[in-house]
Length: 158
Picture 1 (tube, rainbow, N blue to C red):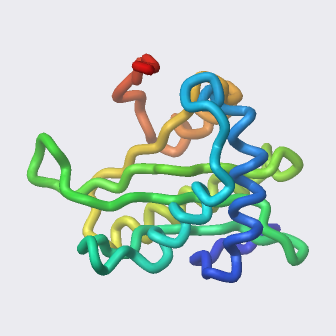
Picture 2 (picture 1 turned 180 degrees about the vertical axis):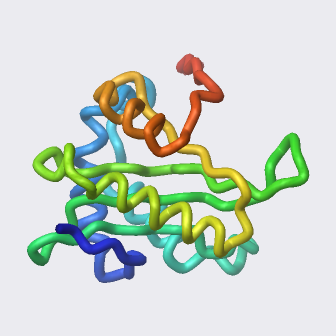
Picture 3 (picture 1 turned 90 degrees about the vertical axis):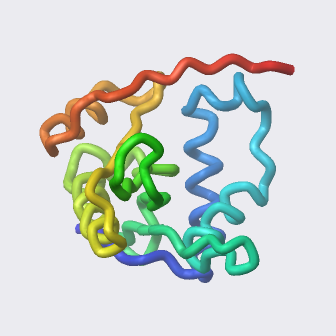
């Protein structure tokens, strides 16, 4: 069983490797092109440490660890809602290694994310599935009480 914990800077190499495995399975290469090597690490650093000079507080960067290696991650951005007087947690990165899917790792990451979001004052949490995500991801979110609320359409402008 995977242990869920807050990520540390020591986790950056493994987080970057998981991002490298995630990216080709997403629709993003067709939209954005190749992912720069430093991109995932930069996001993780901001989530772990914040960005004091920009006034950005640390977010939530959770990892799932099993048998001495990272097997999943969940990164949330917590901020004020645009349309309501509420604080929301929005998923930025959610990944579980294929060999750890179908068990409880993804559920445990989400539950830990919900708790961390509540501790930061969030009343609402948004989780995303991509057009390339397995159907089971959306089904699982539904079982956890999440309801579809938005569909994003993307167009490359350059």
